[in-house]
Length: 151
Image (cartoon, rainbow, N blue to C red; front, side, top):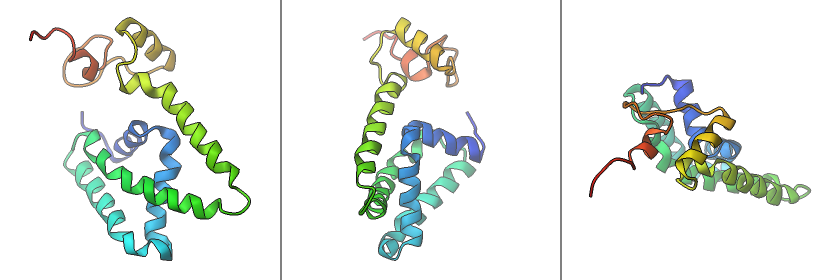
């Protein structure tokens, strides 16, 4: 499915757990605007160039996902500096929030539920019923592809 720039970027946030968006966005800002991040600026440029290329060439949404660990690391360094003095408690709170959101969103990205339970869970969250190029019924393409094959 071809997506515009805003949709492509929003899918990136969804893939990575929306709660982590401030972390990797801070990482991108840190490499570009922090004197300490200057030596890592090439990583920021790499991410931006790849983002533009994938949007322009209608790349799959998940192609850019391997670029995010470097932004997570940079964001963690930035967060550590910001929370150094009075906000140390926010480190544990944010990590806990990421875990809670990850557990809540896990059924959408990993087959941890039976198909019928997954469909009910997805409907409660208001998620799309299917994706991909084929009609898969109520399961998303990446789950539906697991059914019907012979070994």
